[in-house]
Length: 212
Image 1 (cartoon, rainbow, N blue to C red):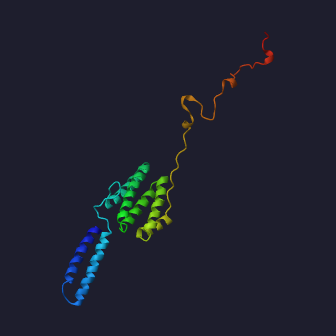
Image 2 (image 1 turned 90 degrees about the horizontal axis):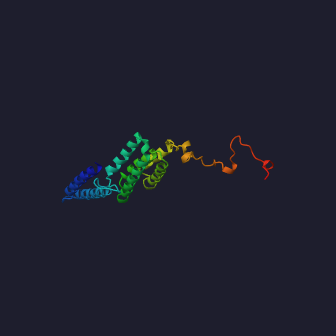
Image 3 (image 1 turned 135 degrees about the vertical axis):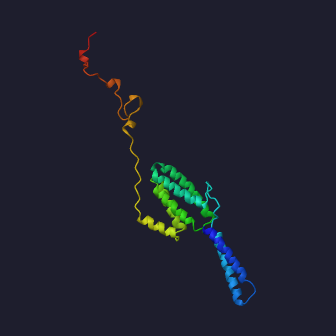
């Protein structure tokens, strides 16, 4: 919507510049030059914005597609924490789209907004790799867009938030210590024939052996 409004304003400014540039007194000519500079400035500003129909990354996501993908991944994870790995993998592909977007339009004001949303998604997913990625995305924001509203907000958020602990994997069950076919667990060797004595059996001594 901002991009559409910008084009409308640009067309209106161009019309005013043409009218003011018509032959007249010095005041009108000065106003015409000012309007022309305004039009040129707006043209430059619009050229810094990514078109709504341009696509980025391996998934060919539009600006709206990037925003919707991050929202949908977070919403699905909220109702099912078992898909943390899948959520993380999909977020990585979305991250590539944002990198592509920034590479082509580094001064687009929507880029830091997307980075902020992605960082919050990574923080939400309760896995070690996702939390580590959240720190990387935060550094990306602070290096490239520290002065943006989103950069300032992220700095405050990280300073104040208390993250949920990452669940610890359960230890192996007792069944894991039992080897197949009823063999004893490792570390408890079976008795050898030379050391095994049946219960109640008498132990023979050399003196009691029969003479030839």
